[in-house]
Image (cartoon, rainbow over all chains, first blue to last red):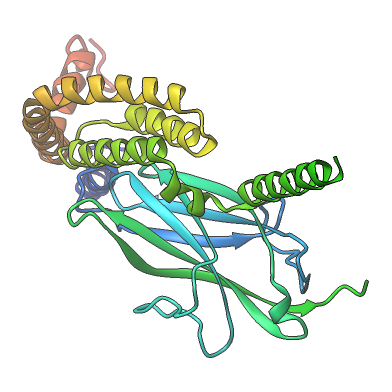
Length: 165
Length: 154
């Protein structure tokens, strides 16, 4: 094979060009990255699946929350636990109108995933109802010094059972 | 005597009930009632803002974030003395980094541009230099070759 043959040389040059472009995009130049933050609901062992279907009144429901930050800077995040139903679920624009029951706060570095084990309890008033356990993701905005709803949340529907005495 | 006993029992009940109430209260509830907590929490937030600004300037803040996480953990646990000493160290490090942050930012930008230009120049250099290098090596390896005529009788 003659490396200076026109076709062989073209192929090698094209490979070098593509390799250079890949190397350029792999560099952290700031503009080639998608910035996002995410929240996921996992089971008590911090794995996907095996979520509880029923919850018992005043008995802790063990779950795990995963938060992943790719916003390009460390984030001070707040996870807000609420109890909602079909009509009061959060949306991308607005958080749930239900009251905050527990607030968890954690610092997540850029590119980091953090897991938070939570034990939540469901009060007696929800016995016999199908409810949504909601976790909303808020972040602290250092520019305005305020907590901002990210439009990200996760929820799990459970049927609440009253334990007979 | 009976009256004193009754009062003591009542007092004990009140104390027990108060202790129970305090132990079952949520962390959010206790945040508002503890001034030391509030002071440290506000300090933590101020430090976080400064770390955020440093990271925006391209400074590597991983170690600062790890220290802040520890401080936050101790604040939540109520171990204020440890949290305080960690925040002291964080602030010292932030002060040091802030004084060199602008220089670091410019040197980061220049380094990135230089890297990008170097990577982009590789295909151009390859296109210009590779045929020349190849011909040079081809010539070097065959320089002492002698042309021999086939079928000559001498």
